[in-house]
Image (cartoon, rainbow, N blue to C red; front, top):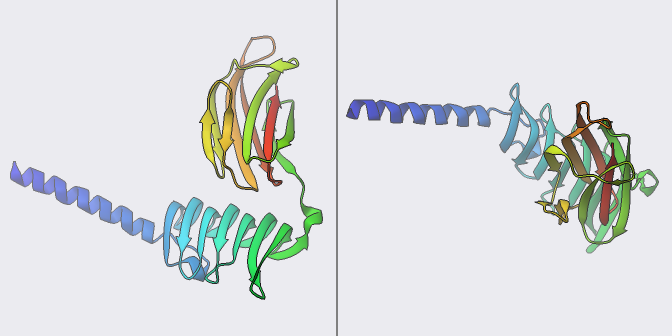
Length: 226
């Protein structure tokens, strides 16, 4: 009996060690954040949500070992960038905070291949994808940092939905009778909503999906018409 317990314990420890070894072998391809990594992995490279550290620090989305998607990068100097990345470079909309001659400075707007191209590229929001959703309304109603979802059919609010799944790049998820969405978010905010709902004639069940990015800080109501 003791031998069986000992064998089981050794097996569990070996499994844990192998998982840890596999995690440590998950590579980040930017040297300054490659010392340690914790997060999703695919084919030996950081892929999906994760956190990497070294001289600098990054937390956000990865793809093929590089920051790709929404993420926050903090340099050793204390400078930081919060926004969109592509293939390890700032690309899209984001906010860069830094010191210039001892003063706090900010560059916010559009970036292309790690270069700032100005606030002309900044749009309040972008609808990236929708399925079984006729149209989407994104309305800014205040300055508090939250994203609230509404579901509408035939001009009225409709809540006969199921399998609701919310994903957000920041904030705290809240789902009550009066509020469905995320509070205390940071921008840009990348969101994904999936749910099931009956079709207009109640003859089938629709699988609905919305993916979007909101760049402008504030209180937002995102209404899905389906």
